[in-house]
Image 1 (tube, rainbow, N blue to C red):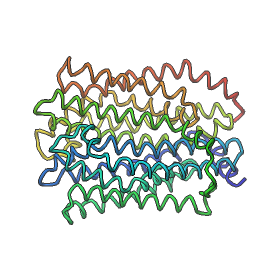
Image 2 (cartoon, rainbow, N blue to C red; image 1 turned 90 degrees about the horizontal axis):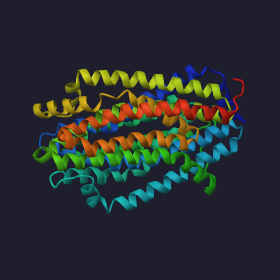
Image 3 (cartoon, rainbow, N blue to C red; image 1 turned 30 degrees about the vertical axis):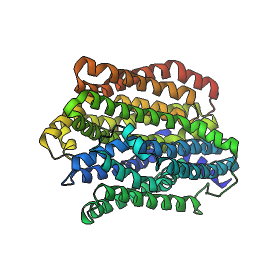
Image 4 (cartoon, rainbow, N blue to C red; image 1 turned 180 degrees about the horizontal axis):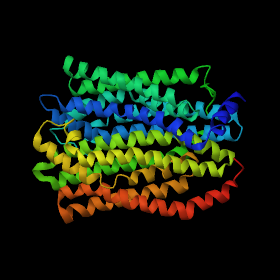
Length: 458
């Protein structure tokens, strides 16, 4: 009963607003450092004297595939952590421990399968993602080495969700920071010192992922952890439940990847001689969005246990307060970034690019893409929080509507306003998607949750 008692003391013993800050902020900073895996790679790669722009575009081509790999980790981590937290809220520590063990086996199996499948298929895959003959050598070097660290990446990211779910947001942040700092130190040494170029960036990422995985495993096996990692026999029913909850996160990530792929295809089709330059600018835009999305996802991941536990315990008012708290925290962070990029887009673009004309073009793309960025705060607060409670049937339509809007914009905007008008697709889908999500949540989802949960006294 120690695990139940510890969780109750944390989640029942503090106001929801303070819990959002206590769990969300460390996880936000942890994910902020996590984005250094990709951002730092791109900054250093973009400064390579010969072929830096092409190498940067190569990493951008790889991004959808690498994000899809990471999506497996979040699928298992978010699903497993939700099952664990709900089990603790229902006073069932044995099922909570089994959820952690089954998540571990799922991650190991997926990691081995992904590596075995993608390594021999990397050439056709990279061309499918939009690579040109000039970009392919850089993309191939980066992608091939990254795949070597797939298992470590999945274990580190996926199991870190179980640290956050047990209220160990600080340890979760330390895990990410350790990996990020390792990456920052190794990047210049391997890229420039040993003259490995883009391969050095990939190798630095692999080593940093291994460091993170070792730290997370050590924490979860330690005596101080309420629910410790103990390898139980896998249970098919529990694995299905984990995947059923986490699959929404996975599908959303795949759709996001599809959007990036289609964006690159549209830019190449309509961009003419500017095709490679526009793809490079799109890589800069995606890098900025990583700065937005990763910490925001950290907030919702860190606070996910609040929703899972109180949903399992039937505390409707606390769940409702948590929705508001997560929205305000995400909104404050995203709003500041939107203001900064609208005022100073060239500062961010200049981190990756040296050519002044490319910096000017990337600045225009950044401004157009991020006009409606604050709407993303609504999406994260509603979609991720509902997912943490296992309410995929509510969360998925709210997310999919925004993706469909974006796809429509990709098809329509270049015909109406030229290829550069495509970069308005993000702003249009963010604003209309947030409006749709807020209306549906307030008028349909929230009343149903209230009826279902039969609120208990706080």
